[in-house]
Amino acid sequence: MAENKIKQRVFYALFIPTLCVFSMGFVFVLMQWFHVDAEIGGIWPRTWKGLLGIFTHIFVHASWQHLLNNVVSFWVLSVSLFYFYHNIALKIAFYEWLLVGVCIWLGGRAGSHV
Image (cartoon, rainbow, N blue to C red):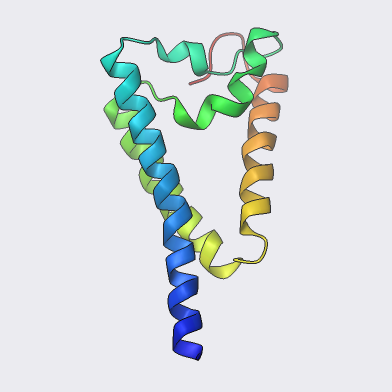
């Protein structure tokens, strides 16, 4: 029974972060394919159009290198979060996503934050 619980915990810890990473990559490929400027989904501090960026900022990347650098750290830290704090990991991840976006929107320098 304990072995089955460990397998479930590992699967849960790997599944959600990996799904997010694939989503980030998929959005980046679509943006490249359709020549969409990354600034559209970025956060524009203290502007009405920048509010959307609070929700989309994790999916917007300026280049392949930017995507790769963010994905590696995001995946490692997210797997750790979901493994060690599996009971509250979704809540923490959601609040962190929103809090970072709101902080950038409130305190970021003028211009798009991608």
